[in-house]
Each structure stands twice: as structure tokens, then as C-alpha cells.
Image (cartoon, rainbow over all chains, first blue to last red):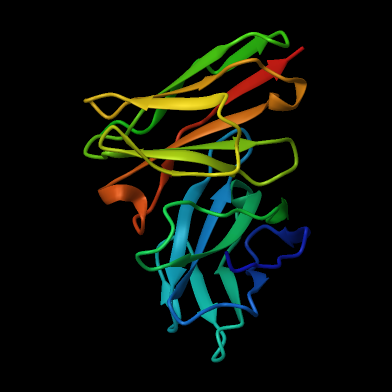
Length: 111
Length: 114
């Protein structure tokens, strides 16, 4: 499984944008970049995914580097509810059935 | 639409005992995956069931076993419990064999082995 590297923790202020980085230098051409997050005392939840182009949904935006060796999850206006552990995961289309989680980035949002 | 549910929420067992954890998948989903999450770590894949058959297994010993029922609910059984089995056990449901689709997680069962 291709490996991802994320900072252990990040801090943000409420209503400010947050940029959560992920490095995946060994990504292959068929690997999609997925993001999940885990709120306190809950199971992980899907946030967003993409292959090459930047993606937007109601929760976040995903910016993917041109060489695909890194990506950034963007929360446009952080709220206290966004405090969670964010996981960057690579999934090959039609490949493994499992999600391979690292330790993720723990995001703290200050009021 | 009902989400993924798990029972019990918390459980305390002693070393050597056996435990059964249960998961009800989201409506319309035929695939259930189980993960173990130790404190401070990301979830680790145990195995997946698709249409009542095991569809992939992680690096866990045979004392971790499972079942999926015709209604697609699932059980995780752990025999001969060890102290290191203390963890949050997460169940996730998806459709179509889980090879691509989003996985929807339940809140987990917290197991403590004394």
C-alpha cells in the first residue's frame, strides 16, 4: 500500500481557513486520494476524494499538486465541529477493499 | 435511512475470554468491514464480508473471526482475549464489495480486556 505522511497536529482559529497537507510521493497512477475524518468518540466519516483535478464539496476542497505527490485538504471556514483527526488515504480504483489509515492529523480549532 | 449501528457500546472482559461484537449495516449496503483502533492510532483493517463471504483479511490471527448474515448484518468474534485486544472496534458498511465505494462507519464498540 502506498504510504502517506501527515503532520501529527495542527491548530486553527474558528472561522479561519485551514490547510491540511498530505505527502504521498510513491502514489501510482491509479491511486485516488481520499480524506476521512474522525470526530471525538465517533467512527471515521468520508470527507472528499480526487484523482488529479481539484475537487469541491459541501464539506471541503481538495487541492492536488500537479505531480500528485502531495495534496491539501482545505476547510474554508473552520468551526468548532471541525475539530477531529483527519486521515489522508490512497485507494487504487478497483483495488484493495480495505482503507489503510495512518495516524492522521489532529486538528484543534480555537474559539 | 438508518446509519451503521454497533452493539454493545462498551464491554469489559478478562484475558482468555471470548467476545462477540455486532454490527448492523446501513440500508442498501451488502458489505461490512471491521477495523481495530488502538488508542492514539488509526484504524487497522481486520477483515471484510461481502454477501456473506470473507472478501479480504488484514494481518490478524485466526482467533479473530466473523460472520455476515443474509440481512448483511455482521458479527466479529474474538477468542482467547489478550490484553492487547483492548481497543475500539469499528464496523463500516458499503456496497458492491467495498473495493471502491465510500465506507460508512458506526460509532464503534470499546473493548477493555483486563
